[in-house]
Image 1 (spheres, one colour):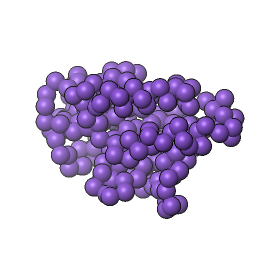
Image 2 (cartoon, rainbow, N blue to C red):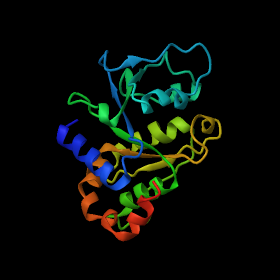
Image 3 (cartoon, helix red, strand yellow):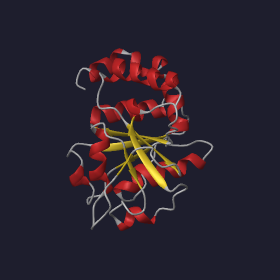
Image 4 (cartoon, helix red, strand yellow):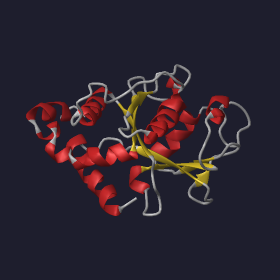
Length: 202
């Protein structure tokens, strides 16, 4: 991850979203040692629960033996490991593929509007049916294959919802799309009085 992109987003996030909870990211790799390994699964365990560590600032790496949900094991992975890191902990050797926000309504409204700001298609953001992990991993990762990758709103899965706040959903953005969103933050609705009214509540 280029330092200029990392630091540029951090500054804009603080400016327009009051330094709300930072997003986490993930990428696939075959390299070991990219983050601490999650404990081996000894039974059913939802990966969304494990991501609370990442949200709190502890990078975590999973492989097929540390994912404790059969649904999570089903997605074909392009690498042996999947590494989750919070945005501020990315270094220059990390190449995040998807950026994941855990967002309450006002924050979600800002991200949703930002993602659609430069689009002619009114369906610039999608909400496909699926498990909690599919909404933050499988579906946004699949969007990387599109010439116009779309962010994904998710965490509607009732089995995953106990592991997030009652008023919280996810907004997952393919990195290729997220770079563009960062670029035009300073020229978007975020500089208007309308947003400032919402910003006060974040």
